[in-house]
Length: 114
Image (cartoon, rainbow, N blue to C red; front, side):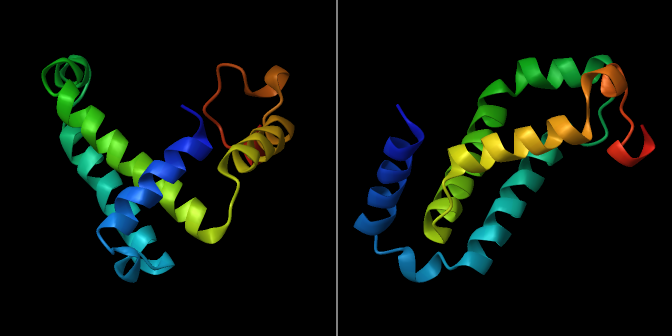
């Protein structure tokens, strides 16, 4: 399924329920942040091997939170008229300039520290 097809399915789901009245840009951004926090909560206070254990035990929950994040992100982009595929391509190109392989490989430094 393409991004456009996914956005259409999300739009149809929303519109069948008459939820556009609640899905303004501010509330969609907040909802996106909340869903991201719910994903983070699954990993909270875990370290080392515990992280991989959480992934095994809570794979279904993790998958559902990732889907919630994607749904809100795709809908927000759609509502704002942002071509998400082009936005991602452009951002990857920009990041490639900021993080050239020869400087960034095996480094977690920010671009201005390379």
